[in-house]
Length: 463
Image 1: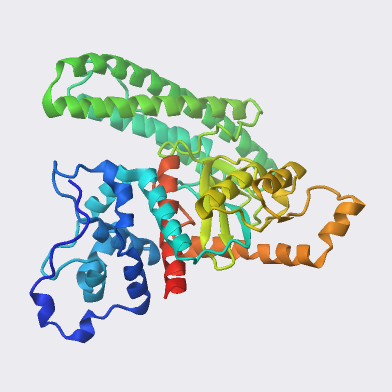
Image 2 (image 1 turned 30 degrees about the horizontal axis):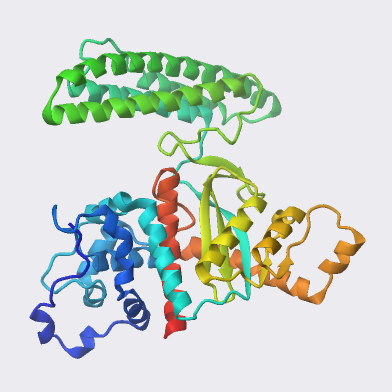
């Protein structure tokens, strides 16, 4: 059951000195901005108005999630800090003497409402700012970045060893739940671990001749890991097949546990098939397709992305685009799987901004990755008056004359500030690494970061 606001303040608040009831300036501005029922609407479709267990008040959830992304806190640390701070309890609309919501409650609401609710929150906030005439669209800038997934650096041997380990553990769960108890399986975790340690020992060798010998040994050991993973998959497929029959006869909580374990094992087998295939491609001298390459068993949507950074030539995660204005308000953002081209993403973003503000931005600027004639035509069709995007390749004399104009160069220089905006999001609002898995999790995480960022910017302009 949906609850939007908290209960009445407790008697204890009347006994506290007035100095303790004053919120810090930033929290006071954000509190006034969030005190609008429009922010409860995105959650309505996920809760019944009358039936079910009452949820925590949505105003409390919104404020706690703002604190989480504003101060880069984990769920447990967030609840602990709110419980220890009078001003934060006041900000979160938690009455004195009441319990702070449990961390798992916040997690469940975040994943249950998902990307749709976060997108609705950002749209509601921007619409509120547009109605208050706080959003300037005389010029906007766009840039892309990589939001790293919460994965370790992927290697073929590491992924194969993890697959063997997880298959063995999941098979044990299936059998503990009463499924496929008579199916013979072999635990290959120790064999996989020995081979991973052997690879680590070979990589420590120095010298040109030793390195060549080490690479030959690594390829041989990786091939052995491929064989182990293939045998583990064969066992897992038999367990899934026999476990399905046992699940049809089970009942109650046992049936639920067995089905969850079987579904997880089936998904794990599918991921292992991809890992084995891409490892065999590499052992044969080829290179796996980065658009479909699996880099994590835990986050199957993450992909390797090359952005040309010196410190990180290859990053593993999702590609994000950010469009902001002169006041630093992020007017549009999107998260995509893999490494799609920059150019085709710009016109849809400007179209969404036009729908939101009822008029197209007067000027749009971006880096050379967007520099195509078709992109400029699409933007002009949407109503953009001035497009300041350097073209790819060697420009013609006429194009050089356009790009050397003072107005063009001023907007291109202003565009570099979008890199600072992205850096600010990464440092202060969680965009450096998403802690939720899959593309939907990345969009939820980044959406909450943008919501917290825009709340601060818009609250300052509204003050």
